[in-house]
Length: 107
Image 1 (tube, rainbow, N blue to C red):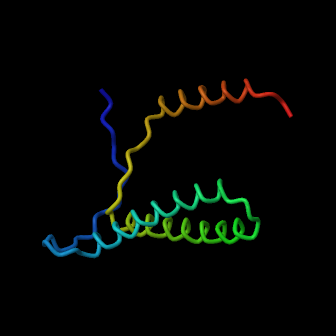
Image 2: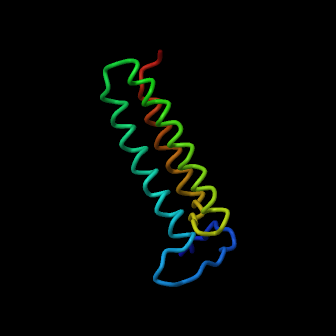
């Protein structure tokens, strides 16, 4: 069996107390930003007024950029880890979606 490897930086240690620490605060804001980008995405799909659409699109981009910066901060400090992708699974997904692409009508 192939053991999954984590992709992670060395973890910056924070106090382990009942009070929220730096990691807890950043994680909380990251979760909020993820929620907001989801909500803005839905709003962008539903809004009919062009001016409001443009305002929401700008706010969405700012929120998405903030989310990405928080993710990068957490990853840098080792507070966010990823599993290394299995090459065989990547190849299978690539073949699957290439098949879907070939089924689409040409433009």
